[in-house]
Length: 207
Image (cartoon, rainbow, N blue to C red):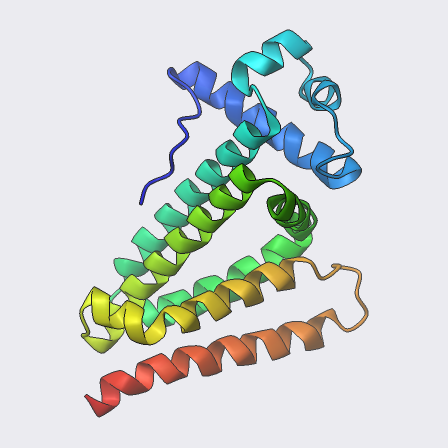
């Protein structure tokens, strides 16, 4: 499944959309998804409300664009992982890299807002589910490369493992970077991820 939102039609407009999304992320993080009005978002982006609506006609469209942008980044990450001679180890390394990055960038606050909005707004919930399904599919491709199983069999046996790792990454992003026990918490998260990936890797050794 591919992202359904095209951010723009021209390179210059695409770059402007990305800049607007960066401003929107900050506004959502500061005021909350429901607390930030379209006027607030336009002001944060430094453009008129009318111009803002031409880029993003609704908050649902903004969420779709945020998801499309994040998925494009993840697609590049997983392409790099799959190009590694040892995809599973590359996945472990990438997860250890992105969790502290999410905490530093305070991404968890934004996604917590979107998750809460998804419970109330079906169109946002559908977009969030598509994102998670896409990530699970990418992870399953790594598992299939590790185990030699077909993708259907990999998904049947290990979709829950991939979903669990996604949950750990999302929840870890919500931990404050100022937390006194951050290093210990991250150590526990990494251990849980490693144990989950080890469960998958053991299949390759048995079969």
